[in-house]
Length: 284
Image (tube, rainbow, N blue to C red; front, side, top):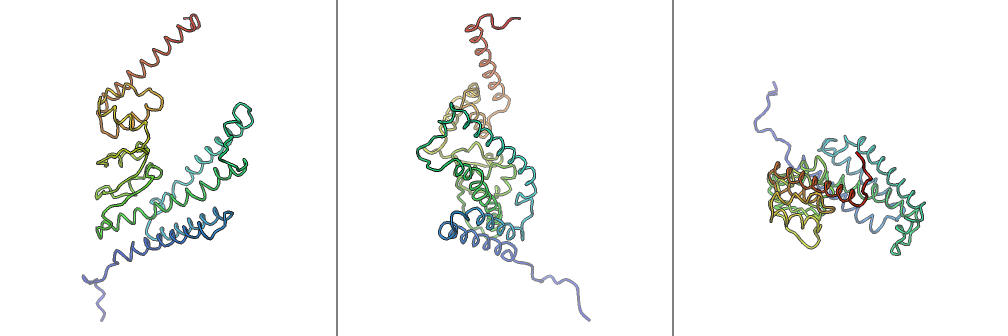
């Protein structure tokens, strides 16, 4: 007679069997793909090669991650939105090229390629040959690293460069372990990071590479507090000012009030100036 009752000492799948192999496979695929795309693959095959690498990463990552975690469930909405942007951008560029007044804006002596090559770079090579692969790679590696740290405590810290490019999405916080934290995020546009990631940030270090508008907004807010939001209407500085105010967790209602006062004063001033320059233009 065979005892089929579960044993308490039955071996459970180890962490390495569940996540380690997947993480190692993803890193191996990325390493081989990077060497091949820079040393072996001809330039004409750059996009097909990276699309094949992306497909391989998806196959490997789906062993331990759901389509939602990989961001694959939102591809229809993202595809439609991206297609609209491509059509609108391409239409604007072609319209500007057809107008002699704007044609000189596209003349750059640093670029020797013709228009077809430039359009290929902007609408095919970069989005499908670079961005798509990087997006899938980050979504494959970061959750695996978070699980590795939870089980082994290693690595002690993780540095992510250009973080605002892939941690601004709505599901950005799910890619990180914000409880253990100890991430170092490098970004010249900190305000583009997801609000939950900004809320978990403990220290910000400003360098010469930081966006000057955001640095200026940070200085004003630290000096004047919510009153600095009176300047939310200023071009270039206004948007970072609002974003940094939220990042610093300043009082909501005072900031909103000062923003409203500043914008109201702006439009009153503009209207008064127009009436002074064009008297009688507006009749009641």
